[in-house]
Amino acid sequence: MSTAFCPDFSKGLVPAIAQDAATGEVLMLAYMNEEAWQRTLATGEAHYWSRSRGELWHKGGTSGHVQKVRSIRLDCDNDTILLRIEQIGGAACHTGHRSCFYREWKDGEVADCSPVVFDPQSVYGR
Image 1 (cartoon, rainbow, N blue to C red):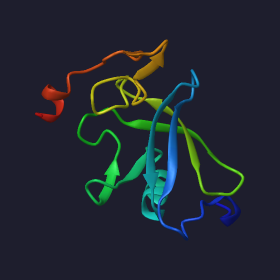
Image 2 (cartoon, rainbow, N blue to C red):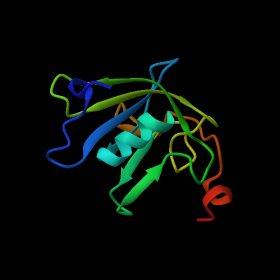
Image 3 (cartoon, one colour):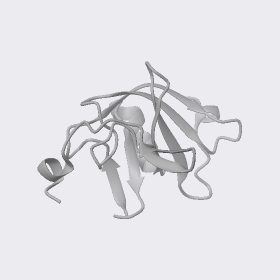
Image 4 (cartoon, one colour):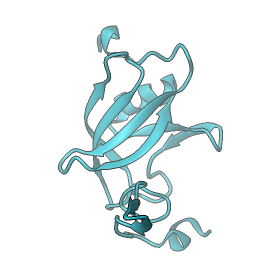
């Protein structure tokens, strides 16, 4: 792959947006380091850097809800990644919702706007 199409990791982690390739729905935002980027390219499945755990994270490695990468885009400054993905299992969020952006502010109220696809207690035991 051309080095011209490589995120700028010189300042550390780079935001990575996961978007459903078929519908355009934004499913989540995570971060990548260079190792996550290389693993994503090598496997065709999304890998991220977990800031909370301080380790590489294969999305869906525990739940089975992997993200198959269909295309990759970089922004104009090479400091944000857009992964257009196929979300296997239907859910991107560890809470069991389809999207991590499952709450919507509307008319002064907050309401869920993304369906629950699985029970996180049965998947993660928490």
